Image (tube, rainbow, N blue to C red; front, side):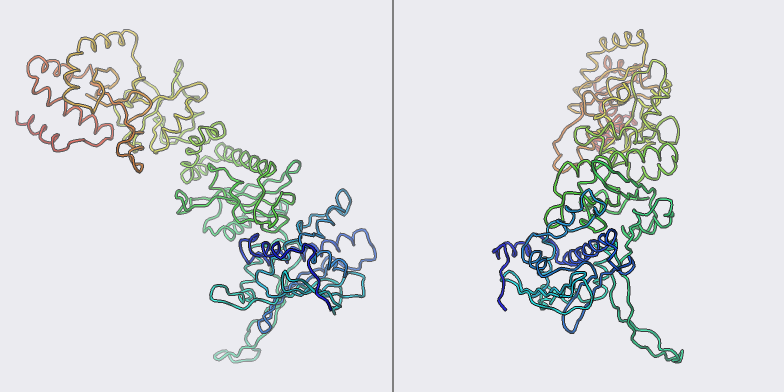
Amino acid sequence: MAKKQFKTESKKLLDMMINSIYTHKEIFLRELISNASDAIDKLYFRSLTDGNVNMNRSDYEIRLTPDKAARTLTVSDNGIGMTRAELEENLGTIAKSGSFDFKKEGEGKETDVDIIGQFGVGFYSAFMVSESITVVSRAYGSDECWQWRSSGADGYYVEEGVMDGHGTRVILHLRPDTDEEKYSEFLDEYRLRALVSKYSDYVRWPIRMLVTSERIKEGSPEDKPEYEEYTEDATLNRMVPIWKKPQSEVTDEEYAEFYRDRFRDYEAPLKVIRQKTEGLSDYTALLFIPASAPYNYYTRDYEKGLMLYSSGVMIMEKCKELLPDHFSFVRGLVDSADLSLNISREMLQHDRQLKSIAKALENKIADELKKMLETDREKYRTFFKAFGTQLKYGLYADYGAHKALLQDLVLFDSSNGEEPTTLKEYVSRMKEGQTQIYYAAAESRSQAELLPRAEAVVKKGYEVLYLTEDVDEFALMMLHEYDGKHFINVNSDGVDLGTEDEKNALKLENEKSADLFAFMKEQIGDGVSAVRFTNTLSGHPVCITSEGAVSTEMEKTLGRMPGAENGIKAEKVLEINADHPIASKLKLLFVEDKDKLADCSRLLYSAARLISGLSIENPSETADLLTKLMIG
């Protein structure tokens, strides 16, 4: 019998398919099971229009048979089978897909079927683990059986075979184990179970395997039980995906069990989101909002992504293209039969269809979070405690491209009460004539509340947002405004709550004290860009405010970044309460005791830094100044 050559006449092409296209060797089992499922699909859909097909739906199955002694793994099905011509055409021509042809023939007809095979190369992935492959097949309704065998790119043989009934058997003769590769793992029952569960759990036909186990021998004594081996015909896959069942038939506990099992979380999900879309992009999505963040969520080690299935077969474990960074906490899956897959089915081609699904999922997640915020505030607070920081990063990222989507989902502490508030709620409570949204940035709420400027603004009857995370102020700067109301830091030079008469009086007072401020500025040095009186400090003597875009809190955040030793600095101003006794004392010292005024200037600057949450630049000097003033 003469050996035949592959019609591609290219050993290089087959070598590439075996060694380059597939990332993981274990993929071969997914491909062979998918081919077997396609073969059953073809016969089943023929039976819908051909009364001569004598098969019930419950008769179909895919079978795995590992034989450790012979080092073979057999994947068989009782589907439509192949004639000799089909064997040569489908297996003798690399990238020839009988499934693809069948799908094209069925388009628009009653037999239109969602089958898996498209490119005809999946079969050849089995050569990654096999030194030779034998395929025995008998077409439904035929009395002839044919056998195809090959050891790789050198060619193949086709000869008569023997097989009871119709279908196809693919027999893999596994490669010998090496120090680097243990091919015998694909004969292990538990390994095969795990691979079926991972990739083919939702193939619509039962995948069975003969499993040999031990049980207690009947009649053996309880204190010294005897064991015997028995063989069980085990079904390895669930077949019907939970996301394809009617939503009314799935309980919350079943969703929770699926989530915990698939995504290895000990907690039930906070929310389950289901979406089924037909039209431009046909897909089903099952998404979960976790109750708490994984330990590595806010690190570089965390990988976002949704599981991607095509007709129940897992294609990718984490498809990052389906989730934007601001929703990277979402777990779940997408199942679509008509995605444009690449040749290995391991990755997606980046096309409009994928982007369309990703955009639809983004909007769906945002809508569901907004619904949770409006209908179950307690649950939303739990969610926001875990993932709110990520939403704030989303506001800031990509130059604010996502702010319209996210701005109503973020929460901030507020002087209005203990409950965090949304921006929409803040604006709804604004005083008549108020045009700005006030905020105070500090390392904690309690520290923000004690800021002199924050106290003064609250006493004037205005609500203040308390920003306590590094990203907060950057996010608000990127937002710039909400509902036409601009954000303003209470410690910035733009805050002016006085009447026109008060403003004019303060301006005159500062002009009269220009020489005093110049002297104090000289004593403090580069720590401040200016010194001036203010009427916005209530009962406090001093504070530090900032001019320009960078606040003192932003300076601290930027200063913690690597390589930021000489980074961006806030332009600080030392403000002195014009109504506090300290103002009169400073004026008197400027006339009578400039040496003491110099000491007081540096001491007031240190005190203002402490109030603003900044470190004292020279603690030793500050201690010496305090001691000097105390002993007179």
